[in-house]
Image 1 (tube, rainbow, N blue to C red):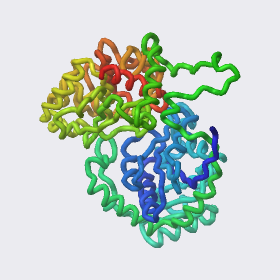
Image 2 (spheres, rainbow, N blue to C red):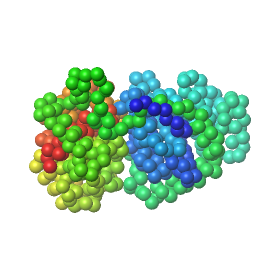
Image 3 (cartoon, rainbow, N blue to C red):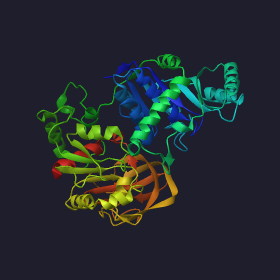
Image 4 (cartoon, rainbow, N blue to C red):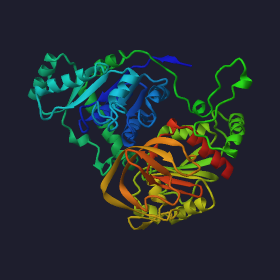
Amino acid sequence: MVTSLHIPRLVIAAPSSGSGKTTVATGLMAAFSERGLAVSPHKAGPDYIDPGYHALATGRPGRNLDAFMCGPELVAPLFAHGAAGCDLALVEGVMGLYDGAAGRGELASTAQVAKVLRAPVVLVVDASSQSRSVAALVHGFASFDPQVRLGGVILNKVGSDRHEVMLREALEEAGMPVLGVLRRAPQVAAPSRHLGLVPVAERRADALAAVSALADQVRQGCDLDALMALARTAPALACEAWDPAEALFPRPAPSRNRELSPRPAAPHAPAGPDVAARPAFEDRVRAEPGSENGRGGGPVIAVAGGPAFTFSYAEHAELLTAAGAQVVTFDPLRDEALPEGTAGLVIGGGFPEVYAPELAANAPLREAVAAFAAAGGPVAAECAGLLYLARSLDGKPMCGVLDADARMSERLTLGYREAVAVSDSPLAAAGTRLRGHEFHRTVIEPGAGSAPAWGFTHPERRVEGFVQGRVHASYLHTHWAAEPSVALRFAEAAARAR
């Protein structure tokens, strides 16, 4: 049912990457949270790392809003799902305000997300090398698309009191409110490396201190009352909140003759026994004694976590849980065995290249993963998981599930992809189409097995990844909310394995 969501909200954007969006957005989230507000954190685009800092600042899962991977039609429902019951929602943008998927116009841009959410935009401007020109810059961004409502500016990296005065005077002439001024403060900058910021899980104590310092900086430099007042100008958002159980098991529309209106099969559902078994699986999930939205005695799906495997969308675990699975996290750096009763294994993204010696040293777990795969246990591995399943990574032994070797390279592979599943696997039936993204500075040789995982159709055509037994391993990051059938298919595979 479509409802009106009344929640104050802001989109924090910038003219370009490196302007300070993450600094400001994280600081605002922490500062408003310290006021006792329930703040819902969101990130436009596919990035996994910034949401970790958002979660630290708010105590709530950082959630992504990616119009390319999930489609513009899911942006508002996913936002409503994450923001339910909150006092304020803040969305950190991606790249520059109007930058999106290459060659696709506004698709997946911060501007598109702001328009879909009908949210006012606050532009974070790196003012370190300009004075009066800031007015021309801001005017251009404010007038480029009349449907994007630019509500004010936060000036970042301001050098002095005199510099601030010149900037304020220029923006006053342009009629643009200045909602905050932040001075240069390198002491609170988060460290970066080859794929961006160092994730929270790798530096939790330091990250907590950095987030606290950002909150102090934002509280001192920004007009929180004015920002909240601007957030409250966002009109009611008419949409139905995304729900993982409903996404997996959509209720049939009311019909005068229900016998002629059966529940449609999930998109790209596999042919054969899986389809016939699906109603029984769904009934079992809904009838599970003591279960709620699928929680109960379902199959255990072990999900890799810890410092080496930090990339995961919150909706993935929610979908698996709604499908009846028990999601249990384990740390490949420390745990020497898979969780008890593991019937499915998910190894997502992260930085195994940073921890290759430690991962190699944990031989008992590597052997357990190899034995699980060899016994036909379903495995879904993405990027870091692909490397972990390889025979070696930078010369260090990994799990040896795949007859392939991985290494660091000088070349960054980054971008959106359109893909079709080439081979049947526990994750996707052949022919399933998904959009995803690649983000790595490693290579694996060979790049695809005899049964590839995906065939990329845009922006280039090539096969990639491995389907081997019940293992699906690939560099491609995907968002399962876009195609819930993959989560249900994997949960079903785990239930059968158990």
